[in-house]
Length: 171
Image 1 (cartoon, rainbow, N blue to C red):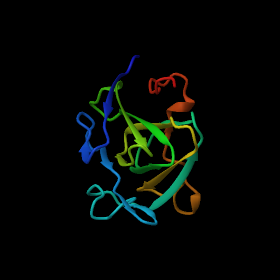
Image 2: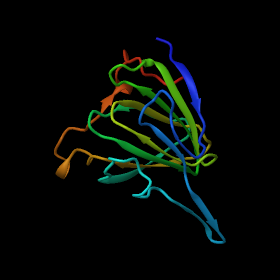
Image 3: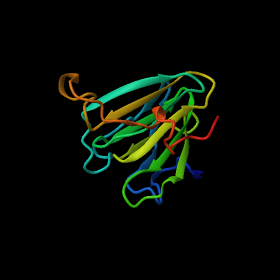
Image 4: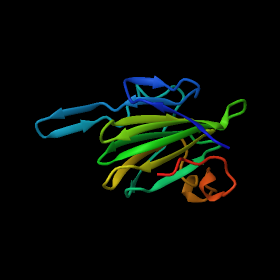
């Protein structure tokens, strides 16, 4: 299956047309003489109903893709602030959607800092397209592996299934 890709620009606050519930926001960056402050999330600006319970960060080296995967119960709120650039890939796997036939991509990171809300059922992946390691902060609505890390991880890992139609374009 060939995916028809649509670009999404990081500018202001936007719910992606055709991808209900996915929200892309330009990350508020407040410079001052010491450097800058990046507002990762604010309780008065996160999507209604999103109740964050955990935050983590991951470092990705240039060329590395994380995902694609999706969650059954978990919603994710990503922050791409740098120091590298990333390309985020999204597909809607919810009932009645185009599934893998339609995908969206967002260029983000140091050159376009953003916050991206991805509800459950939306397949997502991101690739470090920059030339240095980059950090991604993830705020989630579920604890990783549940209370005490005793439960299965809430992920459908398409990257481990060679027959999955969810594939980002080759770099």
